[in-house]
Image (cartoon, rainbow, N blue to C red; front, side, top):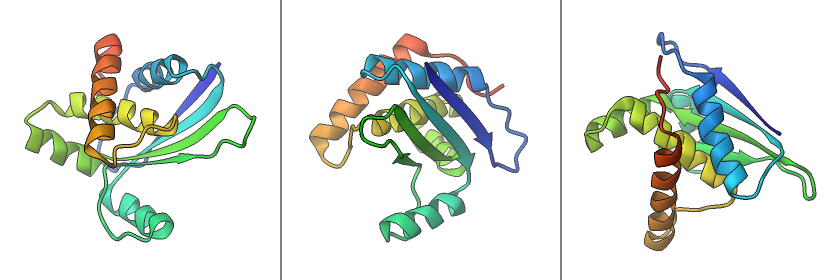
Length: 145
């Protein structure tokens, strides 16, 4: 069984469907070969992610997601995923998509990172985008209530 926890550290009155986060994440993890584990999603702001990026990656930049795989070898999957609400809103505006759609994509995207997918090259980015589409088509549900 995969346990999914959601923390909302955003000052806005953002109400998230914990069930939708769980459905999206669990779909990715189980289809990618993980049937047990624990994942915590922390929805926060730009400055929090920027601080984490600087602390752990020595990069002073804004980013939309940071995924930490905390799994010990031979143990069930464990991870912490940080998503910037500020980046989600900006990305949605620049991509001309609904904010809810972009937020769903970030949940799927970060879950793919958790199981080892990367997006550093054009090939790996294309692979991740294809997988994002697959999982969003399987499980698209409103995330913002």
